[in-house]
Length: 130
Length: 130
DNA sequence: TATCTGTTATATTTAATGTATAACAAATAT
DNA sequence: ATATTTGTTATACATTAAATATAACAGATA
Image (cartoon, rainbow over all chains, first blue to last red; front, side, top):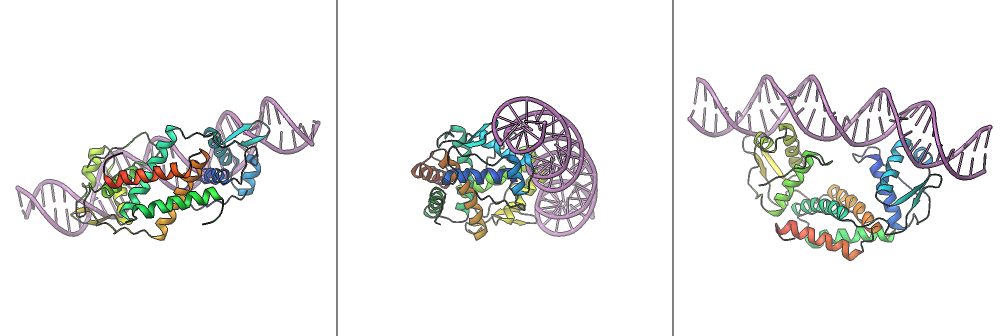
């Protein structure tokens, strides 16, 4: 799995890493049962600190994307282990509300907005194709 | 205009305030030509610091949502003053990618995901109705 | 026994966030 | 004219988040 971080970004490294891994799971490049690299080796590959990776793994565990065995490391959970809980839906809707408002102000009509949503969803689900 | 802030949230106050005002503009409850409250009065109403409100206003100006006259304060710009620039589209797509991936992991199918996007867009555009 | 694993504990540095005062310059109101 | 309100700027300060740096521990493996 290829992970690239933007060290200049305002988005925290642990958060970028979380997004990349979740995207890998969604795309299917990370399959259920697979183990993620150890916190030390991934930290080494990315030239970041062990604790930053560990924070990401704890987040992944908390959200139900991986299980952490003492020695097997972080293991990708089967699809649906993470649930679309009311808490998640609220979080998603809050972000969508922000994006929708900003888009409306910038004169993106409903069709254009939804086309972006659709194409991005398919891009992630497909794993390739723009 | 009614603005409510969550003082316990991890989302910065200036960012929450920005979102609320942009939503107000998108909904139409803030009309072009209208002036926002002065930084001091709004800060007073919200029980936050003058500089926090000022930071929000500077952001709104930078993004093209308001013009700031020396004495008239922050004036809402007509629709389309803020453009759907390539930079904005990239920012939106990055956030959508994150939401789509998380949603896919939580087994929201394309129809469900898009229905959320559609209903939120309409909720904001309409100004009411769930 | 040595190594690798996640985990925990401290400590430190840097930057973001928010607050607190104070002052300035331009416009308005009295 | 004087006082007030406006955005703006400049400091300073406290708190927290983010990231790093070491170190150590306990369980599993080689």
